[in-house]
Length: 404
Image (cartoon, rainbow, N blue to C red; front, side):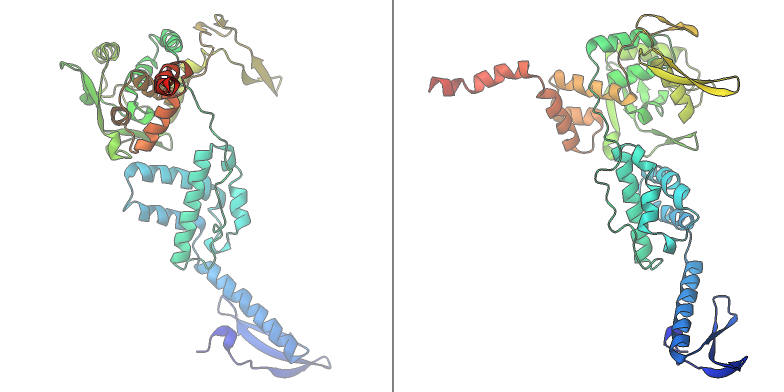
């Protein structure tokens, strides 16, 4: 059978109301016959070619999967050769930033403009999130083109350069800030979490997945083993036994203050998890946010909240004063004049190792860094950002030059 656009035209001539027309018929995407008319052969030919092109396009779109369908298939294919933690991250980003925005469209219909519009909400996220979403877009549509799902790749000129909000580099907490933070949360739910972050340097997902069977307190040199990771899907906690990298699996020695803290916590615990919710289960995402809120509410920084008054949503701004009690909660005292993030606890731990002259390879192991470059970048920023300490070294280095 001849290809649709290449077939020999079969035109007949008819008269309608005293006027002569050329006539032909074609088969549409549903298999129905459609009759076309025109006053000249050339006009009818152009009309036929245009109609056939539209039919071919419609047929191709019907065979093309939706973005949601192909993304789910792509995620399934990735599950064969990526780690469980990586797949969880892919799944979250693909569903939140690609399927949510373009899921109902056919893959063949997606244009570069559609993707740019879909990326607008992502541009309000961090630069690292924006970059990872761009990589996912490009990987998915490249795979679709290689598998002949689409003819053109709409992401070919897509770039992550300049996208997202650059993250402000957090500095390590000073000894004074650490002391004030621990005083502020002493006896409160986040205390154990904060202690592990400050004195063992675990990542948030490592702390929230930590079980007592990985904490060895009754030995000469107490330590803990990192071998699980916490993730959430639809706000439900998922504990994975496969870590993101091999380097993340490590044994971390416990300083006396942390060992004593964990001994007390274990004596009062009924859960297998070191940090657990009221049901002795690992925390959900919202439960962790609530846990961290104990710290946020004790920070003397301006904050905004809304209240409905006479049916209207009214904005209120609070200007906390250091040392004062919260107006609506006498148990909360604004005792912190600095902000704290979970990652900052870990960064403080690594910084303190470097200041204690621990060698870079040991720092890399204790931090669970897969790449020595990550460790050395931090090492350089911390170690060589103290001009007062460099003066002595430079004086000694150039003493010989002065003598000459």
